[in-house]
Length: 76
Image 1: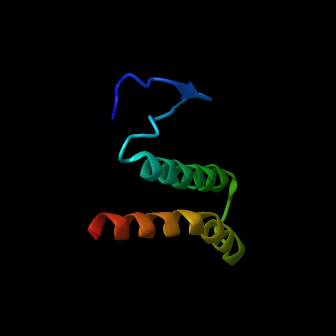
Image 2: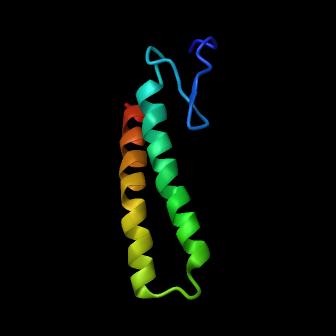
């Protein structure tokens, strides 16, 4: 990856599209956003319930799928 590309958007570093990990990086940023969303939601929850557990699972589902996909890509 070229260190020349130091551009940021919304305080998030933007990699060079020619970088080998460009797509993977974006997938992980998406997964991280979902994880951050859950962490913020958890701060608001007083007591765990079946409903809040379901809500957390629903928010995290895209991250799980992304991480499984990345795992498959990196092991093949």
